[in-house]
Length: 481
Ligand code: F0G
Image 1 (cartoon, rainbow, N blue to C red):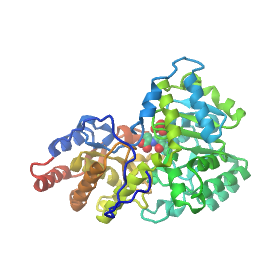
Image 2: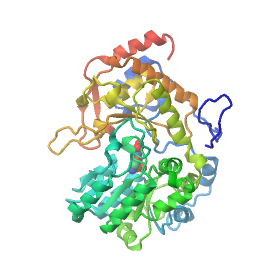
Image 3: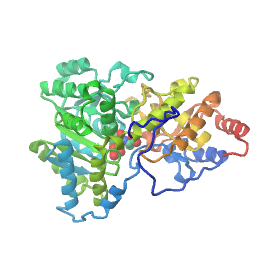
Image 4: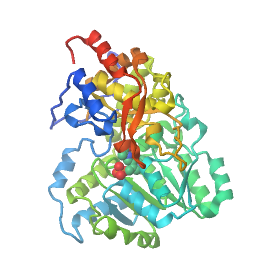
């Protein structure tokens, strides 16, 4: 989006695209919504799409595609081996990252599996700014552990720090000195998913790589949310203002040994992969691709998606394309701040994040405030968000609860999918819920899977608060949905 100002002074993001295909949405009545969330075990992952009005669960695999992407899908080459589609994708990655080699995987976590199987063993320590759920699960499954080195500012939910995803460089240096032997690589997650899509600065990324290389450690970039991070570097970092998005990408990529990504986010398509410069490292990981993903020239992806990804990666280098997500998120965040609703600031990438600890402070962390808020907002507006708090954590080995450092309800804004009036509706229902927050109570597990429990776990209300919420809604909205 370009910097287009309004004569009236209104400050809203202006879309630089037009909508050419639409999908009809339904908004079911509040009574049905209360029933649906119960059927789903109070877990928004288990809701059915027919019951959802605004699906803000994720930005993964649900971004709107461009006409150029759809056109490219028609020329995909389906050969099992040696497909021209693969070559086009490999070349595009070389153009933007400068990497010679590419290992395709069916999505981001499959790339994480390959990396973990290659480099992680029992006792390994993987330093990172912050963990992501699937990343951590792969590392711990193999007996490794994760050490988070985010700055203290990173987990401070209200802040004006533009780069809350940054590493604490002193902590990194200390860990390298103390535990260097156990560290196979340092992982940089740019932007940082679980703390509100917060970016790292270019300066911090380069310093992390320099420290890791000083200790002869590999540097691995999780570039799944890189498009938002690139936009933030360009617009928030003084020394990067004169650089193009392409220049910034190059400067980051040349410092990395390995770049992996979920193409469900980066590249507006579906899939994933690992890009790298070094042939020996490439050979080390290569045999795992045909074993777990598919042949080396598709890696479990559909070739159509690979064509869409190639074009999507090209479009990612266009600031007016990648600004849409961050600008809509900023609009939603700023409106909620104006209404006094507790949200993570500054606005990051991926989505707008409600701070459940301050939204419903009367719900104890052991009763999962972020999960309760997700259920409540679905009832209030048919809006599906994602719990990013204690439910998304794993229990400790002794079975005790691992309380999350932040309790967030993530409201993702898949790129180019929602209109501004839909965002305004979401803001309106969130404000209504905030004014009725005292009604919202906690949740407890009735079915708890032992790993990645947030996907399939089922919970129930700890007191009958949901019917009260429906009643309050009906008083204010009468015949309206
Ligand atoms: N790394 C990051 C930073 C991610 O956000 C994700 C996925 C992955 C890795 C795994 O990629 O889904 O393609 O296997 N994030 C999604 C989300 C699931 O909703 O935030 P994947």
